[in-house]
Image 1: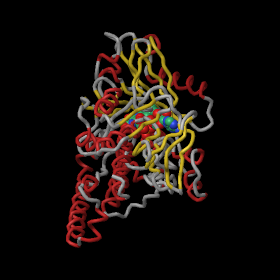
Image 2: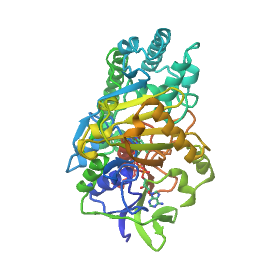
Image 3: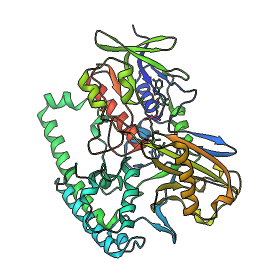
Image 4: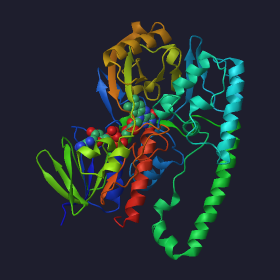
Length: 473
Ligand SMILES: Cc1cc2nc3c(=O)[nH]c(=O)nc-3n(C[C@H](O)[C@H](O)[C@H](O)COP(=O)(O)OP(=O)(O)OC[C@H]3O[C@@H](n4cnc5c(N)ncnc54)[C@H](O)[C@@H]3O)c2cc1C
């Protein structure tokens, strides 16, 4: 008999969500994390009295998204969320709210009037095509943009694209922009939470199938109409928030909710996924072999071929996964600056781009009394030298916010891969099932919906669905 029902490789938020849900369904679970801490890209730590997160975070889809479903179904302790606020662009003239809908577009003066008109027309066209299922999902933002836009406008769109997809306008689809800006919203499949898997019932029960089909059609119609309606009413920061106490509050809520059937071991790097008669049967670490009936892998799916034998065509698919490297610079300011007197985040787009969040405005305990903590994130182009990127990034911050250098008391750098897979037009997402029975995959390279923690939560709901269908849950 195996030592555990399930071994989860990786103790980031995807691995921990997986362990929580599986544990609450009565499984004995072992989580193995290679670092001496859990949380992966979803944690906080102290630097010179300031509490930094692993990159600035907006937690999305909180009203009815996958994280909300996981929290409602499995958390015994809820983090407190503070409303996100707004997204702004910063220019030499200060901050302007990023337009969420056509009305706001009309008055968005960082861009020339003619360009705003052209962009509004394009947005209406894209949403109409999407609403009627006619938008080519491979159409790149670059090819869709109207001709004759000014450099500023192209730079603006060019700055937004990587923060929504991880890559440039050329590699980002229009579809992705519509989802990323909340015009179109992903839904959570209801039947994941059904007592019986859909596949079983649909095979035997025609009335159940027709009921589901009818529900789906009604849903699709109303979703299409509300998508178009959002031209007038959309909010980019729809149902978004920041966890009071920092990102670690979300992590702590998951750890606090963990049932006793889950064991977490840190400092344990999995070096091999073991198989027996073609099925996953456990893992090997540097000094141990541990058996389990199933393995859930939450590391980079791209690295899977180094851990287990896989078919050639699958390895070929995995090689299509694209990633982006980011640089975050945390600046601890000795005193608050009026430039950062807001909640939400800002984007700078002129001759370089950043995305910044003054996170201590959500919770003053994140910075020492009277001080302020701001996180600035940059995308690092492939092959660039990290040290010169840091210098360039700091110079850009100083250009965008004159006078900031004299307030800086703490500087902390993080170089990270924010999502395990960028949502590019030809990019690959692995899904939850691997070619090896009993080896499942979760994380931000297994599901392309939404982003970050929300995407991780989507992947775990899909894991549950797959394991139910495979009669392992
Ligand atoms: C700068 C930045 C900004 C971001 N902004 C947002 C945002 O605004 N909103 C949002 O929702 N998300 C955001 N994210 C993304 C979000 O933090 C991540 O998507 C999420 O934390 C990923 O979780 P994960 O568990 O899938 O992966 P990870 O956090 O990478 O966790 C994987 C874990 O597996 C472990 N592991 C891997 N291989 C092995 C092995 N062989 N053996 C043992 N352990 C192993 C790793 O050490 C790691 O701890 C941001 C991230 C960054 C870096």
